[in-house]
Image (tube, rainbow, N blue to C red):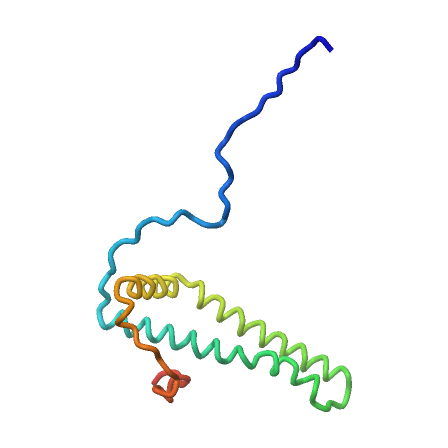
Length: 137
């Protein structure tokens, strides 16, 4: 072969090791929240905690119709279908709460606060707040 073919090689920057990881930019200084903002954040976090605790029992509640005695297989199927729908709705409600803009804002504020003053955060135990799982208290 007397014809020489040139092979074009494009040099480009290498692909990032973690394609979904965004380059971190310095965060703005900590915004000081007023009491009302803190109360609303605590209310949101409490609701998240309650929903998450309730999700711990979703599988037993999902399977409960299969363990109960029913007169016909049709009733078993209907009850099981209802429990699937209920469990699915509970998961979707929790997921919407977790990814909501307000929840993200709360988590970002907590992250910034922890970074600026990690010694000020005390461990919390549920025994310190026996009414923690009661809404509207």
